[in-house]
Image (tube, rainbow, N blue to C red; front, side):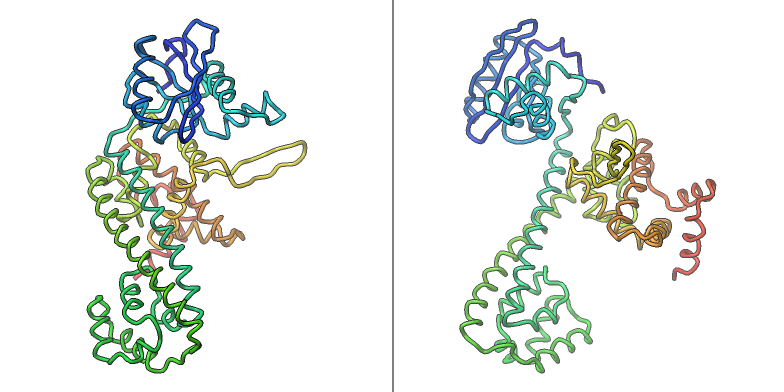
Length: 425
């Protein structure tokens, strides 16, 4: 959907947002006079300001600012007479630099000369912020916040690993996965080697069984390791503060793990209410974590992307080609949605052992000398074209259908993929 003509708006507003106040510049349709002002960041002040604009100009009113979401955006979206045009901060910064090469900047000037100027002079370059369903917006926020929680788990487990190596390294050998409630419970109950060595065998067995660890070879191996372990140090000056730090980190880790469980339940509930859930759930390796993220990546508006290439570029999967004189080089795309790129790359990596052609394509890229990261991004690039077609036609994924298409086009991947199918158990 193309944005409406710039002449259809009754007024134009450029906003330079901040934490406590927002500088804005206003220009009425057909007027050359710019009015500047400051808006306090309170719900009451924003509502009063919005109502005053509507009483003065009616609607619709175009608003340009450097945010696609955030408090000021949420407040403006309550008024249906505002049409919001988000601009990437780097776009506005480079636009400013083109006219102010000295680098001088102040907030009112930024709102007046840049955001508003960009809206008035280059409306064809801007896309209005489109409203999606409450369920999709909820899911989008949930999956992003869940990712932040998992990043927090990674930071804490890395710190926990570092502390344990100083006085209790055996605990790391006994537990391959440290981002679990069982690991937290173990360290809470036996925070030092001396504590766990005093535990009876029956107590240890009961602990592991109560945490659904019933593989006897694993339980007996851990108990044997506990009995034969030698302390790294017995210096209380090392053990005492390290133990306190471990207990602190374990408490933080437990809170994050429990929060992730609650987020997973909420994500599962919201994502199943969306009509395209089964579409992305049909993909290999998607599962309960990646399916909602892929669902958010494409969204509900099927006019949002005109081609698969637009998604590849927006997600940062497509590399950037640069030419200057006789030189030509390809590099990583910096300006993109990092979360979206993570989504496609992480999911593409999970398809390698689950899709015959994806595994064959990955091995093909590695045989050419590509690193693991480059090979997975190349696979994600290829997958996006398939996902785009599925999304546009509302067709669930079928591995055999795609293999037949590859065979029809004489792709060398068919031979490798077929061999993997024959050799698979």
